[in-house]
Image (cartoon, rainbow, N blue to C red; front, side, top):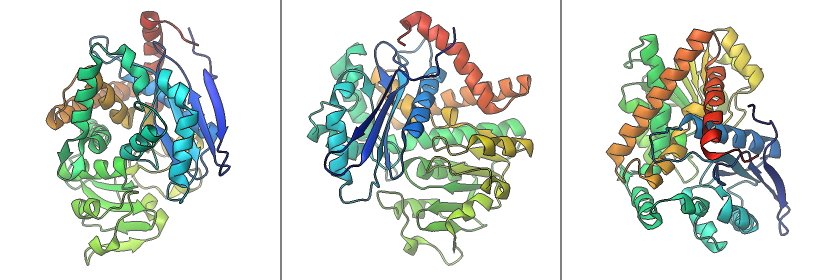
Length: 395
């Protein structure tokens, strides 16, 4: 049984004070609930949010384990067309959440995404009168109090100056890259990486890859690209970030260079990690990419036509629906009790789960002769009917 292309719910909201627009798309419900973060960026569109919501449906299906406590949810996404640095941004966020309160209370679990931190979402949700940004899932829990405490405890864990909640997604991205290297027989030492974005996902990815022995030779933020062919000091850059992932250039060493913002694309590196905005790689700028792998830490960073061109010249794109799915899965693994509030357990479970998923996707791609993205979509197509048979179709 094929899934209809149209989402279950799609709506547009206009802020009565500023005129900024916001969007909510619920692609699918499973047991009456959907999951997907809320992003805030200037230029955010309904089409963008629709694509992200469909991607969340796939991420949930990809992590479905019939033996686990984690119950897969449907996919959803929220978006606000506003610069998160604008003076009015927080007020817009509060009013958006207030307007979406009926959905968040009953159908949509959400959290941080591009432009927002979980602390900010939690603060705004409280001001909007919500119990929690994920309260819709509470009726599905066996022991709500214990589950909420477990997740709250996990959010207090700090690992070398960075919260566990900010690290698990990048742990998954890094594991995806390492799995690709292992399958290709490429050693970690000496393998070069370029990262676009040093926010939550990009920063954590850079840390885990550097600690695995890879050399991070370029990192881009809104000010430009920082580069060093011998490798940047990732920990120093992470410590010098502001809340939006912008690095204080005083942290750069004498051998580090400052280059234009798009220089990360053409960096001499084997692995390219777009970890910031959607649509960063298009048909034109893909021509400058010399990397062997593009690992999609951001949501939808490579346009379809660009991926076709990259594939044609031997560049492998590891798709976002698999690569960056670790954060969402970690929330639910912790809440439902598959793992406890423990960093080592979280990292081990994330690595094991992501490694199995990446290996399955790449093996299928090789066997069928398709792209990794097509293979991932094939896995989703296999799993969605199984989930629907267990929980029912809500379309």
